[in-house]
Length: 355
Ligand SMILES: Nc1nc2c(c(=O)[nH]1)N[C@H]1C(S)=C(S)[C@@H](COP(=O)(O)O)O[C@H]1N2
Ligand SMILES: [Mo]
Image (cartoon, rainbow, N blue to C red; front, top):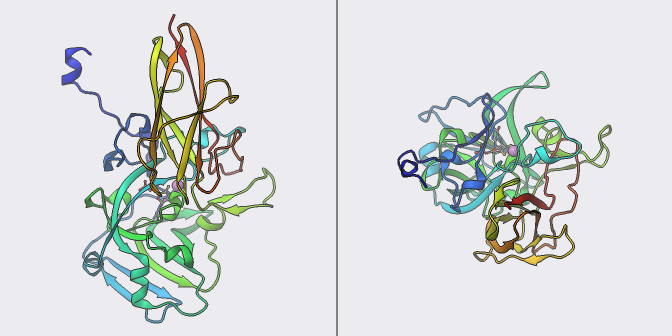
């Protein structure tokens, strides 16, 4: 290291995909912390940021409930809280790697971050209103809105009642022990551990219990797996995160010196927990188990690493696949779908070793 590197210290920045609405990736290869700092947490928005006034901020709980309620900011933040450490991954993460290519934000590997979220369990909020017989889903409306298919709509999504009542689903107002930042949903956002990011509705305004199936544009057009290019048959909704991994070091196409190098990265899944991570140096013929750094926790990524001796004047392909407790693993070939969700093909980097 040159002396001046210490003075002009380089820091990671977000990787920009678009500015309005703001869509930026986390520089995930350069992060060592298990909680992504707020400024480096990825940002995924469908509309411009909404204007928020805290004095007049209420959340309304309505629909198929016994007693509808309107709760002020201060009422909610003084409720019994719970802290959940959870990653959030956009279902479009790694979309850029689909073949054939698909339309949409061309995320590489950084539409994922992990944080400490504090808030009140949604089930506690719903205990105030009670739930009417026949209730099926809970709909969450965000304050942000704009034009979609020529109609003015809010970002709005539903959860099946059973998932909504899971004690890990919270209405959060803190991220990494600080007040939630405006870009991540201040004053309140839903956190739905185990589901792809679209479920974690930001700038939460209205909670509506319904006795039928919700079908808004962000529920029934977007965030649906369409396996065929030209027809909608066999479609099904995007819900839980697929088992997945990333190689943080070495980076793809990096040139390294001969000798021992540590290969490291992250592995995660939706429901269930990571059970093992395997690496292959021979195009998938044989696999070696990589030690995990911690006992895998539900809803959190786990770090893994593996040391290997690399010979001079050689090219290597390093492949990585994770397994989870539900018996799922990363496939050799991604499940192609028209809108490009849930890419979790076996991870790989190619590296070159100097002469
Ligand atoms: N109100 C609202 N909530 C939203 C979105 C949005 O555009 N509006 N985007 C969703 C999607 S697709 C993702 S991946 C996550 C991203 O959360 P972040 O920007 O805090 O990282 O928020 C979700 N919640
Ligand atoms: Mo997303």
